[in-house]
Length: 75
Image 1 (cartoon, rainbow, N blue to C red):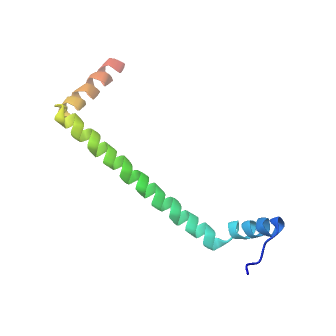
Image 2: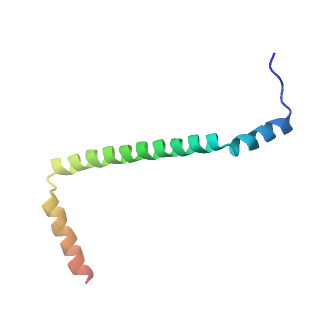
Image 3: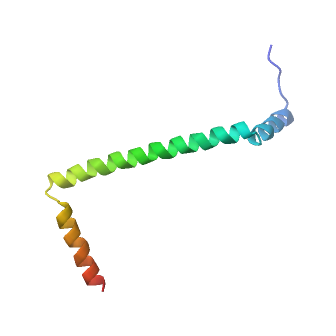
């Protein structure tokens, strides 16, 4: 039979775990994995969007001309 913890014991265990170096390392690894996944999803979206632009005839040269025109306009 499992021991039933009091609310106070639960809070003490949460505090102990939050202060644990092992928990902190695992959290850091989890954040890193999450960031890498988010970065991958962003790259996938950019690739999909870039293909759509290419299919509609947009080129790097055309975008560069637009950037240059904007810079000229802003000056």
